Image: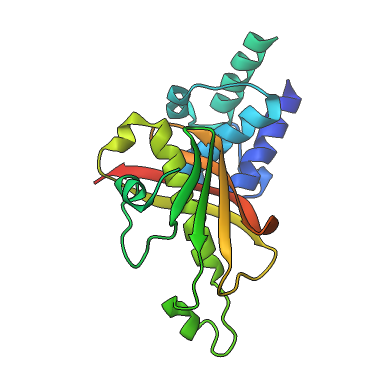
Length: 81
Length: 143
């Protein structure tokens, strides 16, 4: 499960053009990392593609930190399993 | 097939910034094939570049973006309100120059569409040869 966190960290880092080391599990996306709504959607689409899952658009509002995204991804991964 | 009159119902852009002339195929939310005729009369050829006219890549992106609006419009009932669209990010590679007389065929397919935004895969062809391709994302805001 640590792997998922690292994979998603790298995916987020590439989209928001930051070094993965800057993205701590509880760094706030908007306030600390400058993530905007378009980037959030790209992150969502990136995760859907990577893990072949579907995440409903309402969940975008919960894309607040790396750890919140990892939790959401895990939830939908387990639903698929 | 959609002609000019139907296209302008979907797009907020107007002269001189309508970058698609016709929609050949429209599968709402799935695929759009659109055409932009590139005439030597286009004003930008005077300066881009003098003596060597080449369609600016940014305008190919604009054509892709407008085809994407048609795709988005078909998928989103909310888009029937008066909306403006703003690009969020563009990752496009230009493969061959587009010249006066070419007919650009643009194919766009969704990567992710939600109610207020979309990410799409876009490709532009001239006679079956891909001239540009990539990914663009945009948001839609009610005016």
